[in-house]
Length: 439
Image 1 (cartoon, rainbow, N blue to C red):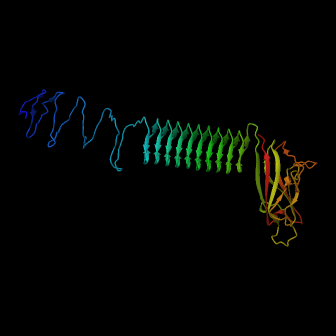
Image 2: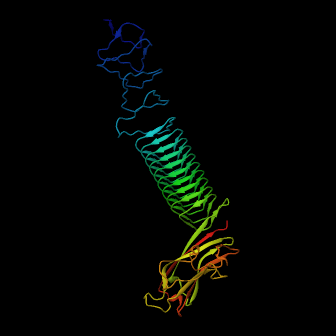
């Protein structure tokens, strides 16, 4: 065994020797002294003992720990912390980790649970989230984003790549996607929506701001825009299109449900509606035509004048509009007394025309108690009665009426038997006007 030496010195220096220094109690190095180990020497604490530094320790070179480094207090790193393998923070789901500075990830960020961010979120790579993404600030994704659950953002969402969302998306700010946006559930945008690619929504789409799309709008549910809608591509909707502002579609529009627009609707390509309601004008650009069918209902209670003849305004047509056809469905026969035996005042007729000719579109046709209901009136396409000079020529061939001036299209009701229209106690008729608006 090598010899043991006990030394009491103000400065202790080891120069690669084969001996050992052993303290039966403790080896104490006071603040005014130094312990210098040359590179070829070791300072070893046996398993039964310990190595304790009771003051501040400064290492001028590298420190290698082969086992675990247990820190009961705080670990403060003023430079960079680099680990070449995998990092694990915590060992239980209840562990909580706080980062006061910035987090920069050059690769992917994957969260199996919820991600809640009060500030802004930027990612240059892909983002994949199986849980909920909840961001109070802005979200900027320079690549693609894939969300399997819900996404809730108080700020703006900007995605340079594609956006996939299998859950619901709720945004208080702006949705800005340079690529495609695929949403398998609903999306709710309180501000503007801007997409350079395709927007595909399996559920409903709500937008309180403006929507601008360079690609295709494909929605299986309802589309509600509280402002304006611009679409440079095609729009295909299985549900309802509801726009409070103007709707501009530079390609085709296909809706299987209803379309309701408070402003002006402009379509460059073809349009296909089951039902459409446009408060201002419907414009077809690029040489296309749109045949609009208006439905106007007249009830017996709409008459108030003490007269046997009274006209009811159906709608105001503009100069250049073309009237294609006018038909009517008698839902309830017009009578002044519900009893079937009533004869007096039971004969009523109706025609359709304008101020120039009250019978121009449809000649007088019975609509009183002698007519079976429900019944189709003015069925010009089947050659039934009610043919007016505006829609039929002297040879009995179909024509259309092109308006050379603004005109009020009116239904003219006539009572017989000395009764007034204001005395009616029942009666309902639906008018259907097919027209092409002047571009």
